[in-house]
Length: 382
Image (cartoon, rainbow, N blue to C red; front, side):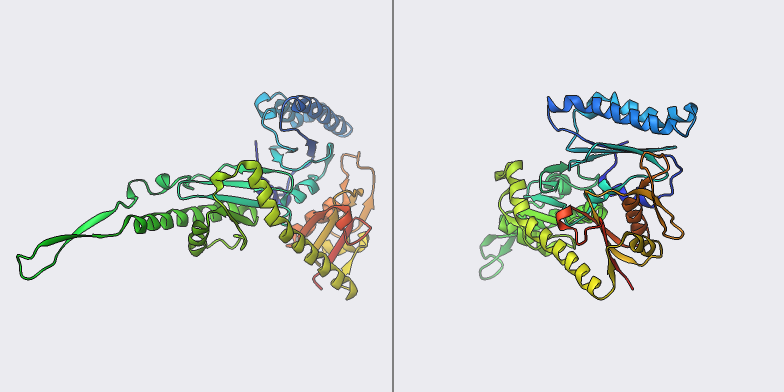
């Protein structure tokens, strides 16, 4: 039932039989605020049910909303929520996403999933991962501006050096060499492989295993920048062996054991935020250059047609803007309508899905960072 945010592209690219039910809700991490969350969730499910009833017979509505009501009764789930919730359901499909960002309460039935809030969560310029590393153990976190939460490591990634090397941890050893004149010279013991050298060997082997596991199971799956928190000597050794292209050049040169979770988040955002801002500024500058050359547009109809034809390389969507309507995915014609209609979704969301399906990138940003006033802006490939 619970899905990782990095699974989101599978939802966008999959061909899903309608009706598609999309529910988003702001949730709370702690008691007593979270006591009202399941009540509000039930109210949103009722909206879905009412919307379905406008077109579908009762015998079809029941199975569609059943998993939603079962989730409403799952007390354990509601005791472990984060800042937001996304639930997507359709015939034979039901997925739940715990989100690290607030979302507005929203429930709609359409021919496709409403995915714009998930697109926002999935954008790399606002999210990052943190690898807390010592020679004894590792932890992995995912963060935003407002939160940092530990991530369960994928199976096969060693949490500790003992777990990684087991009985293969190198022990200091000695060899005996004979020095002096003749065969009867006094035997003198000389240690080869001092304890410090052996510790370096073990640390390097441990770090290689950690790097490989994090890259294959977390960095590649999420596409998120990876910030390393470690003592300077561990920073150097890990970076020497790392093959992870997502590893950020700046790190936090501190013993992570000396940092509480709140301080890790504070330090991490302090390092990550300037780079995040620079990446977004570069994207916005790229749009400005493209617009000046006739290779960019903020006109909704033009962008819709360009998206369907595979012309859009980069798309910006205003997080605070909504355009109810239908997108003809054959012609690119955009037809405004009432979002309460079960067959109608958000035009901006539909355009974003098409751009992703055709290999473009989508960035959902706040209104004050949008390069246009229309809720949409695109950089064209040609």
